[in-house]
Structures are given as C-alpha cells and as structure tokens.
Image 1 (tube, rainbow, N blue to C red):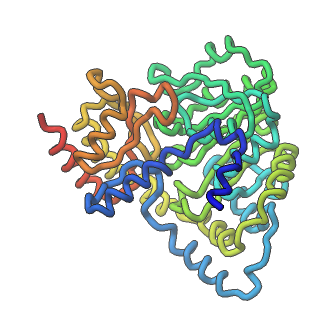
Image 2 (cartoon, rainbow, N blue to C red; image 1 turned 120 degrees about the vertical axis):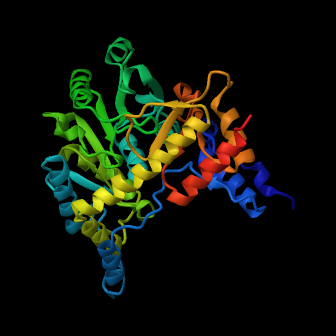
Length: 394
C-alpha cells in the first residue's frame, strides 16, 4: 500500500521552528564517538556533579513507600512549596506565600510554555533578548506570538538598552523575557537593571519574566528581580534546581509572582500535566536545605577551577572574553579574521575533537561569539585544552 503517511500534512507551526540545535548536533557527536573519536563536550550546561547526599537518600526512602506513587497535586506538595519559599527568604530575602505565590514547575522550559499560553494571544508581541536562550523564540513562534527582539551588547555589559527599548514600537507587546545572570553572555544581574525593568513593566503594562537559574554559579551575591519593590505585581521570576543544586535531570523548577498571575499559570499547567512524583518533590525540598558549605564547593570552588582552564582555551582559540562574567559558561568573541563562529567550532570539533557552541544559535548578536561550558570534570577540561593547543598550532 506504500507510505500512506505521505498524504498527511503536519501542522503549519512546524514550519516556524527547526529541531533544537543541540538535539541535532548531539546526534553527530554520538556518531563520532561511536567511530572512536572520543569527543570532549564543552557545549551543554548540564552539571556533571551529583546532588547532595540527603536529597538522594530522601528520594530513595520515599520511593520505597507504598503510598508514595499516586498522582500528586499540580500545585506541588506543601512541603516543596514551603521549601521554595524558604529558599527565596534565605538567599534573596524575598518573602513569598508558599500557598499562593509559588508554583513548582517541571523545569523552567515548561514554565516558558505555560506563561506564554497564560498571557499571550496569537499575534501578540513578545520581547526576546538577542542574544538569548533559543527557547524564548522557538516556543513563542510555536504558539503564534510575534517575536520582537531587543539588543544586548558587550558595550552595555549585556544589559538591556532602555533608551533603545523606549524608542521601539511596543504596541501589542505582552511579555518581556530577561535572563540574569545572563546566558549565554555571563552578564551579571544588576539591581539597577532590575529596578529599571520593574519601572518599564509598570509604565508599559508588560509582564517581565526573569529567568534566574544561574544566580549561584561563580557568584557570591545571588540576586532576584523580586527584591525590587513592586516587582511582584508586574513580574514573574523562574528559578531552577538544575544548575544551583546539580539536578538537571530531576526537572524541578519554580515560578514566583503575585497570586493572580500564579492562578492563571496554574490554570494552564493543570490542563497539561498531573504533578511530579512525590519522591522527587520531597527530595527537592530536602535539597533546598543544602548548607552554605555545600553551595560554596558545588557552585563556586568547582566552577572556578574549570573556569581558569576555559579561559586558557579561549586564549588558545584566539578569542577575547570579559573576565567579570559569571555563570557556568565562558562567552568569548572570535578573532576578526574568521568569517563566523561556526567556522571555528567546526574546526575544533573535527580537528581537536572538542565540542563547543557557536553563538549564532542565541541570535544575530551572537554570531561572532563562542560559548564554552564548565560542565566537564577537571581532567576532561584539561584534555580539551591540550587538544585545542595542538590543533591551533600554525
């Protein structure tokens, strides 16, 4: 009968996006590894260290309970919401009502979908940073939103240019995505930026959503947009355990805002999923109690060692970088003699057998940049440096 599926036409929204860059490229890396090339991956921000031991123990203990395997509330368990509120109070001095101002998420990526569905109609505008996390753009396109890019530049420390924003046509814009400490650029969070964002949101009736998973990485002074007076009324903040607690595969995040916004997002979420496994929620709650010493080692000392090697790699590549950047990546500008970043990253992949990320995937303003992840152990980082030094010799 032949290929009957050839008569089926997919939804038009598939024409607005491509398969995620890393999804495509990791297939190539897997093929190269299968052929024996032993690629060192410095591309993806997936922490390679384990969560805290008490979190793992709690997960195992709860998994053995016969009554722990049923459906859980979409709103999350009270234990998890209370732990999340305690986390915000302890680290950011932000008071949140765990019953009404916090919604656990199956990771921030899910939150991007839910918030867009809750606030944006097809055709409405969404302000997206360039460079920025590709999912802000791709999910907005899938849902029929209109992408309105705003520029981030090295000259401005990768902070929003508010003079430029004020001159833009903001008609029909409903959301603005921000991400500080910034990924991919490493630009640090600034309380001045946060205050100006709240003012911008209030005056233009735009909801600012700050994606804040990197505030602990190589950063001794974590900040939150919700520290600004009045922010809760017009802003939403995401946070995640993926980076700060070494739990990327656990898929535990949160959004925090006022009770009205949370209720709207919950209305969407409750129609999409049925809650996270109870063991994961209680173990995550336990991880929020990690000691200051645990955070200092996991989020600072380990990444500082690796960051020093990454800086050597950037120098070997002939790239320049801002030493003040924070987070779990190093962002560097390619030499002027190269046409684009992918020219460099492809050479490094196939000659040095090291996978680093070309900045074009983050937007037009990233075309002359590369990004190195710090999520490989010390020996693999040093091996990457050795290979690249050998590869880049004249």
